[in-house]
Image 1: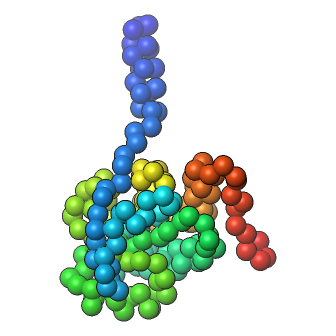
Image 2 (image 1 turned 180 degrees about the vertical axis):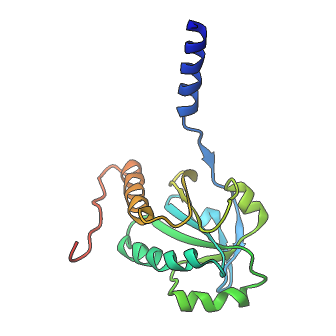
Image 3 (image 1 turned 60 degrees about the horizontal axis):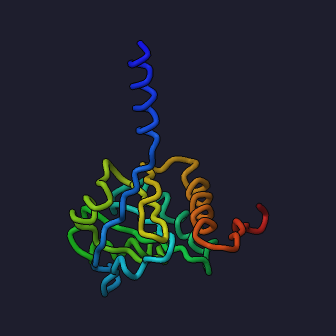
Length: 173
């Protein structure tokens, strides 16, 4: 019995150990033209949002990303939209205007999907730290997602800097 309890405790401890996964290296075609390389993003906290043009929850949360990006302006944070299941940039381009997307949007590839550990549906969002490690993966569009994301971004910014970053506030909050 003691051996069983010890084995279960060891299994629980090992399960709780952090498994650091590096975000993939990439060079992806931007919907607005040109390329976005992972090397351009290193040294920043990066929110990577996997989405599709037909995905209603994706289109609901994208304006929230735009607001959060504006709120965090001036900090070492970037947002990147990675669109999947679209044939070409001409299909995606109208959505940038319709949704007010101000951050880079790139055409996703199978290699990038696999490199991030895959996704089961849309939206799937990854939070990547300044050392290009995947810090957290968010599945779906849940009511607490933006608040959690903002808190995690602030934590990562504070972790990476010597002087603490104050949580941004907006008027009326």
